Length: 213
Ligand SMILES: N[C@@H](CCC(=O)N[C@@H](CS)C(=O)NCC(=O)O)C(=O)O
Image (cartoon, rainbow, N blue to C red; front, side, top):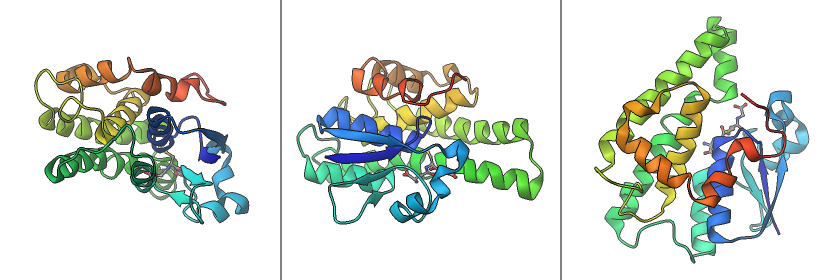
């Protein structure tokens, strides 16, 4: 059995949780309370020395970390319900849209960065929130430019890793109070994605330990 190490609010764990459901792969999830720094306990650091969720155990000799690496492994191991397009150009476009959220936006707003902003620059909670909102708006603007008019999916009207990333980005944007209606193509794809049970049921608000905003 695969074990997904996550946290209710983790957007990176969200991407993996939704993919496991889309692919119909059985898994158990173990939650680690980031707000209580449980990801910095020695037992968790043994799983992921970087001290971050997600980690996926049970399918490989060592735990897998980094949502993109985990998703690429899932894709190769469980090819049914493909989440990458068949063509090289399509795969490049999907990976690019995935990284827009997972590499260019999300890491700027995670707890370790928020803590550093406070410790080094004296940023209070409101400043940290606005910092995050800024980067989420930047990401939304880029997605808006990449998506096509009338689209209900990021690429070729077929579910892909890019949709997992966009959905996680939208959850983050909402969390930091960003108005998505200014980005109509993104909003349209998001509305369509969250109608899918795998996307909706994976949402942080339905996970063990979830706290109302
Ligand atoms: N690039 C990583 C991000 C991992 C990450 O930063 N996860 C966050 C939760 S979404 C975390 O565990 N943060 C701990 C911290 O910031 O202290 C991925 O996509 O898996």
